[in-house]
Length: 239
Image (cartoon, one colour):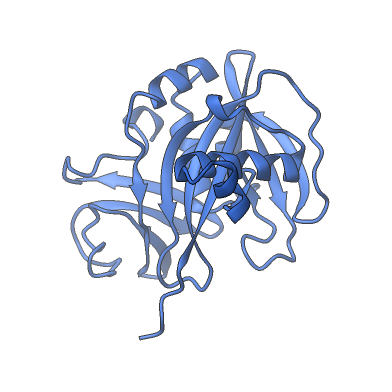
């Protein structure tokens, strides 16, 4: 077996604002020349640096927030307040990937509509759009994104305001997600805990389905027949 690459700590922040009865989010398009997620739409974020830990006086949770806020400012010119950030989830890259991260995903409201200024290096484009529209555009193949981005957006569709999102998400325990890549027939799938094939890595194994399925360039989330110990990342109203 080849050696598993260590997962580097990283942070991402979903920037949100209220707009006409819905939430809008800021998505950034990565430079297509980049090896990791090149050309895909992402939330602002990046690796945690030693300076973040130093600034947080060794508090790793605070350092994760600092990293997310710093990266947002570097990539799009917007810096959320640390106290306003609420953790949504924690994802760790599958072990088969050569470049791996364990990523804290936060959401944060923006108090005012500051101007977006992309760095022009890692980030080549940016846009605000309603969360539901971002999901809809991905599902018709117009916005390429990775599973954590898609699943996070689908989960956020439950909320019609930033205030409702913050109140609810602060009251629940963020899920820890450790996906497993597999094949199911001729499709790539990402298996989550509770899926029949999760432990074996066999995407064709019959039984409960807790996975994201790649259809062309579009992800679809499935949670069917899964034990209650493995609740869905997306509620029934969002599926």
